Image 1 (cartoon, one colour):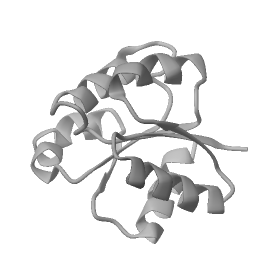
Image 2: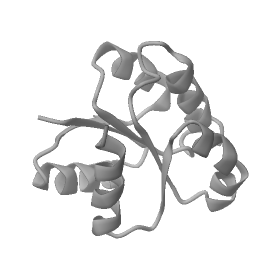
Image 3: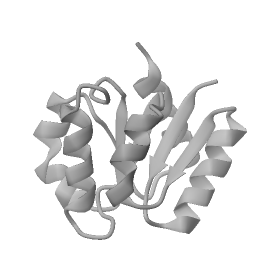
Length: 123
């Protein structure tokens, strides 16, 4: 079963993501804090990570994203940045593209989420 980790500090968003992804038969791991997420993800590597970039601080998601792309254990795991911080996403668009990171701006509809997940999981 494909395992997807969702990192976000919004409990309601996490619960919604778990429900819609589990409906598609994905196994879902939820991480509520960016501070502990890196160790959790590294210890139990998922097949895909969906990450918000704006959490406790404006930098916390970006810091986690950078750690995930630099670490030899996690750099191969596909990433989707899912955020409403559109200005930040545009400012980092070149870097995200260079690292093959999919972007899913909030708000999104469920079909957009599913399509983004499928694209990210393709070899």
